Each structure stands twice: as C-alpha cells, then as structure tokens.
Image (cartoon, rainbow over all chains, first blue to last red; front, side, top):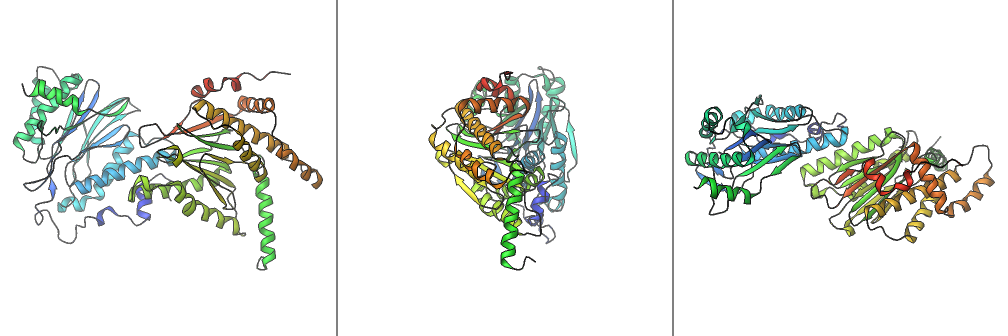
Length: 262
Length: 274
C-alpha cells in the first residue's frame, strides 16, 4: 500500500521496474550502440521575474536527425519543469513517473510535496537508473527548475548521471550543445552590457535565449536552434509564483525577427 | 455456527441493522451535474468527506473516517497505476467502482467473521460534455447505482428514495449558484428526514412503522432553510467543483467559504432567536 504517499513503491508492488526496460548487465553499452538518440541543448536561467527554461527541438541518433519537434522542457506539475538531455526513452519515462508521483502524493497525503521532496524524487530515480546510465543505454542529465512556495523564489537544480544534485545560482545547462553556451552565459553574466542575467527583463532574457540557441546550433549538429522558415522555435517556459507558463511561439517569432536576425 | 445457511442469512441481516444504525447520525452528501461541471456538497464536523481521486474524479464519503481512508487508498492506487501505465483517459469511474470498490466492499460485508466497512461512497466523474458525466454511489453491502446527473448518499434507503423523487420533480440547475441551492436543499431535506426517522431506543416497533409515512412527506421550504442555517452556524459547508471548464487536465477544486457565502447569503445570516 502507498500509505506513505510513495507512488514508485506502489508501482513496484505491481511489478514495475524501471531498469528492466534498460537492462545493463547483458553487455549492451553505448559503444555497441552508437546511434542511441542523444544530443540536445537545454538550459534554465534566472531573470527578473522568475526562471526561464529553454530547450531546442531536435532529436538525433548519431548523425541522423530523427525528429524536429521534440518537447524537451516537460511540465511536471503546476510549479516545476524538467528539461531533459540524454536518452529520451528513459527521460520521458522519468518525467511520467515524477508527474504521477507528485499527483499521487498530493492526493493521498492531502498536501503538496515540498520542493525539496520533489528534488529528492528525481535524484532517487537517477540513482536507481545508474547501471543503465553507466552502460550508456539510459543516460539522463536533467535540469530541474521550479518555484519553491515555502521560500517564495524560483530555483534551478542540475544533476549528474548518478543522481547527485547541485543548485545553480544563476543558470544551469545540459546537453551536447551546452559547452558552447556555458561560456557565453558566463561571459554575459559577468561582463555583459545588461548586467547579470538575473536582472534582465523578460524581453531581454528571451532575446538572449534565442541568441544562445542559435549559437549552440552553430557549433553542435545535435542542436536544432531556430528554424524560422519551418516556424520552429525553441520551447521556452517561464516558472514563477503564478506557476508554469509556456512562452507563445508568436512572441519568440517576433523577437527572433526583430532582435536576432538583425 | 454460521455453517447453516439460515444462520448466515440471519447474521447478514443483523449486520444490516447494525450498519443502518451506524449511519443514522451521518451527514448526507449530494452531487449534481450541470453545465459547468459536477458539484459535490456536504457538511462536516471537522473531518473532510470529499476527496480528489484522479484528474476528473472525486470521491464523497459517509460513515467511519478510517474505513473511508482505506477505500480511498485502494482507489488512489488503482487510478494512478492505471493512469501511469496506460493513459489518464483510461481511468474511469465505472471501472474504479465495478472492478475496484464494489467487490472489496461486498466481500467485507459478507465475511461475517470480520468487520464490514462502515461507509457509503459516491464517485463522480466529470466528462468533456455534460452527457458524459457519471455519478456512482455504493451502499455498505456493495450494491451500487449509476447515475448521470444526480447522486446521493443518505442514511437509509427510504430517505434516498424520497430524495430521488424530489430531484425528479425539480428543475435542472443551470449555474453554479443554482446547483449549490439545489444541492443544499436536497441536503436539508435529507438531514430533516433523517432526524425524524432516528427513533430513540426506548420506543416500540409501532413508532417505526408510523415514521415511514413521515419519510415520504417532504418538509416545507421554511423548515429546510432553518435546518440548513442552523447547521451551517456550527458545522462547515464542504463544496467541491469538478470543473469541466478548468482548461487543465485537473478539474478538482474546493470552493472556499468566501466564494460560497456570496452565492447563498441567506443561509449565512445569523439564526433568529425565537
């Protein structure tokens, strides 16, 4: 029974095990399967009104583009989003487990799971997934952003593949394109004309995000960037006291043509 | 001693008496479907009686809180595992009731060596359109009923019957305010009928048979209004809306006291001393 509000335990009692999906002991490794779909640019960044989380939309397998409309910024509940990099099958599964876990907790315990509790839940999933992560068949490196209602502020966390959790002060990045934008973020945050990113207004922050995505796509073939011709813009979500809101593609479109192309 | 069939029947009949007695002090619960969604209404003395089960499903209970809690977990587990392994749209109130709740309650009722669940449960599911709303109510013996626009938990079958008749005679609610008025009125009638049928232990069987007539008469409007007012003065009105127009996956919303008071101000006026 899930009297403690632990949905994962309820699932396990029903015979569910996440690692059976990606067995690691039978010698499968990423080297043997170089074409597992990975490669991405996702990041979260604090700005004046909260946190913005962005992700490109390309899914690749090796040098093949599999899909150009992936949503890698997943809404877990009203106040948190997870941006995923790594093997999508495992990542989407984790997101679904989290989503149901938080709902189950709220409905059974009649109170919301604390923000810290949510972070622990993701950490536990990653830890349980470690064998598949090390084998390369189930590697997931997420960025988790949410609004902490107890403390009244937006927060960003990033993880390593084994489940270690780190809080980001200003921004966190993940995915194959992240090394490019990490440098830009560091530079802009320290010496940029607009001052530290956390002080930017929404318009400047969104413009910055579109420029970052474009830069990532320039140097990383696995990052989709912006394709204005195909009307493909990154997914950007805003996390604040009012909850999670998706920035409409129209807004990104006009900012892109006004401030990125020129 | 229960091996003989008639002993068993006797034991089950005793159980019915025992259980009916347990519910005589319980609070009725009403659910009505209208354009905006499904409204569940009851009054509580501190322990909540209405709970969220899944995205579009709410539970209302009457009876012992510990039993209700146990059944609530059964439903939560079933709904969430199904919603996770298949899809949220596969979680339906019909399946929860028929496969989940009814067999459990029936078995507990008929296993006469063990304690039965002292609880009656109502499950409501709001559909995309009003004709897809479903409301199930189950008795302590595992018998359940399916309805589309109205559901009720009442202390006894005869009160239940009177209220179903009353509902049929009424106009269908159109707005939230309307639905609240209709539900509260039904709640008030149920509560009054219950008070008039709960006979003190000392009285003989004759009195019981004479009260059956009382049950079929619906109290007048003034008596109903007074009953509701008096109750709300000392107990808490509990209202949940399964909001069809929420625009989100989740539809469950508890209506706050400050939302409720302007909708039904007359029931919140201080009770006149007379």
